[in-house]
Image (cartoon, rainbow, N blue to C red; front, top):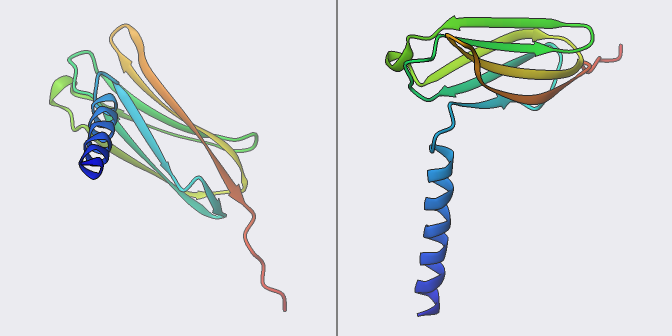
Length: 125
């Protein structure tokens, strides 16, 4: 009986967690990897909830010495939910990576993550 209760409690927890993840968040972002060696490839996965107001999705990776951005048009409710961006050859630095969802009246939502790119390992002669 205790085992059944534990299993139900775990199942309830996961169902509640899953409903929060998909419940009304217009934009969610994942960044891989959080730490890497240069030259790094940053992969940004942005999930956009379907809405007529969605027009543009913008992603920016910025450090004190480097800036890279990408922007795509979003076709409202008909747009793909998942958008994947890759920034290649990213040099050493601490990066603020930000995704911004823009609608007809300006910014609708944003999300940010941090990535750290370490210097490349040099081989000794």
